Image 1: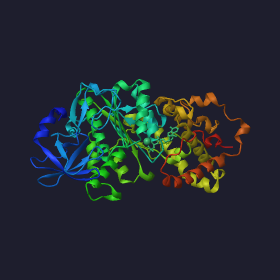
Image 2 (image 1 turned 90 degrees about the horizontal axis):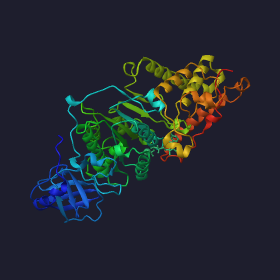
Image 3 (image 1 turned 180 degrees about the vertical axis):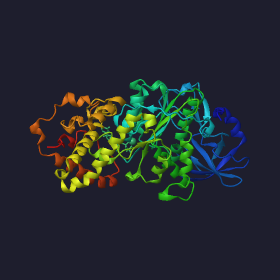
Image 4 (image 1 turned 60 degrees about the vertical axis):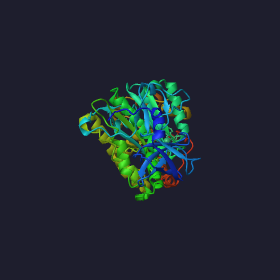
Length: 528
Ligand SMILES: Nc1ncnc2c1ncn2[C@@H]1O[C@H](COP(=O)(O)OP(=O)(O)OP(=O)(O)O)[C@@H](O)[C@H]1O
Ligand SMILES: [Mg+2]
């Protein structure tokens, strides 16, 4: 399975003579080619126009014609042009030489440095490891981000997804995780950019260079400026590199993908161009197969583990979208980002009730952590239920116990925000890493009402819980009677309802909301 394909250039002369073809038709990215001598097999890579245009064979139409999808723009391609058959599939470079480098889907270096020399070339189309070779460990992968470590613990060697609509903070959260984990993980990190902004790739490269973690990192990009064929294959190229480090070098790999939805979308474009009938909501009929072909290769074997974190764009914030649903089923942890929390400035905008992880069981995280997480969820769910009553009757109508629940839930919500290193530049607050122990302690102390006399804002955007005590003295008795508790809660409820309807029509992210929102005036909600 790991046989290496000789470098294409060596085959060049031989194949050019042995199997020439001619372009029959060009429709956008879809090209039909006639071969008289020998029909190239599926996934063969063809070149036209002095190797300027690359085409991958996806269908054999009849005894002499194949249909392929171009991996490069097809500008300048015309009927009758000569096509050469490389005799092999698309290859990706693997080896130590690719470390600290940045590549495109063909394995060309795009960091303005010379092409790496000591590399082998391997096909990007590979089978997932056999079931017998797979291994499972149940080990926690700490991220230093409170809300994730407490409520959605990640699995070492697992797949985690960051789900969210446009502009709710997927890329920021992914970047923060890279920042927090890459330094103290001994393995290799591979970042794959699929169909996202070109500038984000460049920014990440610069950040990683400055942070000095580039020597253990590889980046592969097929961003939104590339044709669908290229975006469709770039994920496989990144996986091929990850598999090399796992299988040949026996190292653990962290594979980061932004954004897996763009892979599905590229497949949809390819499928449409190839003339297949669309399935639900216009998605390709083969979406499940294509996605599992990619996801199943992200597996752990006795040789090493591939831990993967994938951003998943959710169209129109609709988690029942087929693309999101298919992706959910492959993951061991789903971090759902909520527009409501983002609109309140509660970053990271993780939806505390919808996110879940299969690691959150007492056997793996331990009894205390499990029970605490359950209690946090219960408190938040109760607050969620009470919101309707508060909106209609007011906070004053709640029983003292219910009011305690509201106070705890709102403090928990704020404690689970965190300043990020990735946003230091525009938020002006220094990023913070918090250990799992500190995060758990903080939540426990809030649930035990230790902070009921502190204003909610004291818990907002802090690291460990003791910072709340350092900066803010408890409310003075007279401050306790300060009016506004109810209006703050109500304002939150109102803004939540309002932003929801706006959210679905709004597809562009807001320009940098200031992370000092209404919590400022969100006064205490404790008992009077
Ligand atoms: N942790 C955070 N702290 C402060 N602001 C944040 C945070 N996360 C996100 N934001 C704000 O939200 C904006 C959009 O974030 P980001 O680019 O990560 O969204 P996205 O989900 O990747 O969007 P897209 O789907 O368009 O790629 C950021 O530019 C920033 O202003
Ligand atoms: Mg993004």
